[in-house]
Length: 349
Ligand SMILES: Nc1ncnc2c1ncn2[C@@H]1O[C@H](COP(=O)(O)OP(=O)(O)OP(=O)(O)O)[C@@H](O)[C@H]1O
Image (cartoon, rainbow, N blue to C red; front, side, top):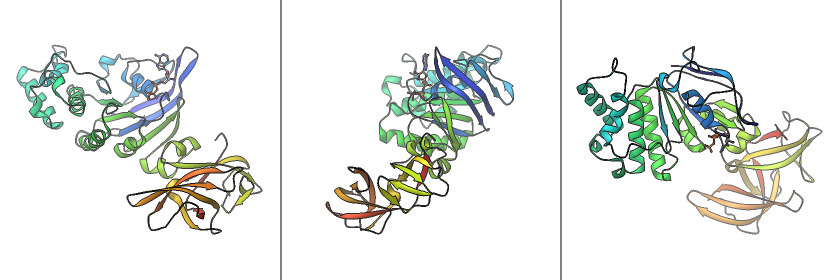
């Protein structure tokens, strides 16, 4: 089932929560909507689900107008962060619920319901919990059961809103892998909302980066990480050092220092230089584009993290870099930093 969202505008009073959003989701995709709090992810998901209505624009499923149908008629399954299971029902009954309330004409027999619930519990690998009650489950188990329940009605589309948001970091990581594997098995067109970039990049086959009700970039996890389209995407994904620079006469200037960087593609004027923390090579003084004094070093694992006070910028800017452990860094050292990769975006781009 494809989903096509066109020119969606959604306002709450005078506030525009979605500002002309266009998106196409292909059959069988697992797409992540990624953005900071308030960027409009949940609003977009609710409109696709039929829980909310846009002020303008269209939504179609396989070319058919979805806005003409209510939530109950769209065959969409949901899993929300706090979509509590029914407390007074066993796990089995929770998963069976959607099947039991289907219209009589299409309702399955009791034997078919039992078989389907068993299959779904097998799918989420929790068949051994069928007789338990939600209060007897861990948070991660509850969300897997919520997913089994959402899948019970054989939805054409699966919508997940921060499904692992309330879980601790370790369980979240396990469930990410689990969800990806599960999706490879069931292939339902799915949209997954998260504000966690690692989660989006790890789980989804395409990522939609949103900010302030607009889509900033749509691409594969590799694309949005390696080729961020805007300053916002660069700043939001991965850990970047951002320096205020000026492009003048084809040169990049940081404070009173001219940096030896290629600025062919950069527009003249005030700009921002983005460098990922691990993309700065540390060398002896005088050998790189930037220079600074090591202030503090923390070593762990294969890398060391160092605070460096750059000498070029007014009274100095402190940046944090990651360097391999074999490079001996000590507080007080004067070092040069050469970006292996970097991007320059004009101010406001
Ligand atoms: N019913 C509502 N009435 C008024 N404003 C709303 C309503 N629902 C959402 N908003 C506003 O619309 C904007 C987008 O909200 P939305 O929940 O879609 O963001 P989000 O990206 O999902 O954020 P989060 O990650 O915090 O859930 C927010 O500024 C929010 O305050």
